[in-house]
Image (cartoon, rainbow, N blue to C red; front, side):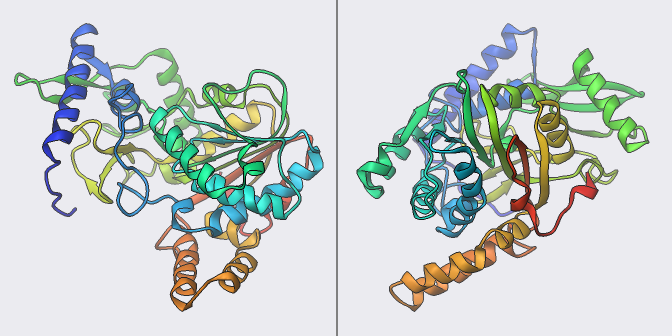
Length: 394
């Protein structure tokens, strides 16, 4: 971990306001709050949380780079994968993106879907951050023709009315506030955040509630072994409820999730005894997840076995599971790269595109760390998972 410069005075003042809010919550709840609540406040507290406030998050000047920020190839391949679904569902199909980032994905995806004659009736972005929503709006207004821009709308809540179409989420589940559990004397405890004598955040464990305890025991049964004494990790027992909520009134269509994570047997390996929780600021890993609340991203890897369970329990057919590299290669990466190179103005632009393709697919970059899972109801979506099936790992 590299040494990071201290945040500037304005940023520090912002962080201190959020720290004070969290301290108030801890006092109000008897001296400790679940880690999931701490993470929720750090990321989403109105006007103060990491995703709710105004600092730049995405791209080279932010804290991390998501696949759509690298260039056009990622979104073009996703559009290729879902275009047959949208065409099969017909002209009233919708496309809903969870968390629109900078708007880079929507910009490319809409242009590609137009070229593929697979435009949805609307392109909706479910974006809780007012700041990000405004940035997305400005970008798309500037870079889309008016007819395409008119297809875009922003949602405050998932659509409750009946709809057909595609739900897409890239790097969303890793940012869901996650409970953390610990095993002590064979019992399941939940990690909480309390204050030490000087008002600093510290970790304490409290007996887990019935939902979390049952979820931990379910994982142990699947792994066919109890967790070792002192084992600590993350688990999202609310994932099925979250998935049902974001689907809203979806009748027929496809769900597509891309994130970093593991199948359950890899996620809960004995050597990963402190889980996958980590913090990032300025593209660097930060050792202290309590440092500078509101100024750093908190994230945990995804248990893709849990996602498979949630999707099928929601009444969808499992469509496939593979690495990001396999998915992009199987959905037109080579053709999209060639098309983009043909339009590039100079060799520098072509080189940038080739580097983008490498970052998206190389094992040491995003290619294997990021994985893709799809579900379908009343339509065919297995075509998108023709390469590199990993469902045997689940």
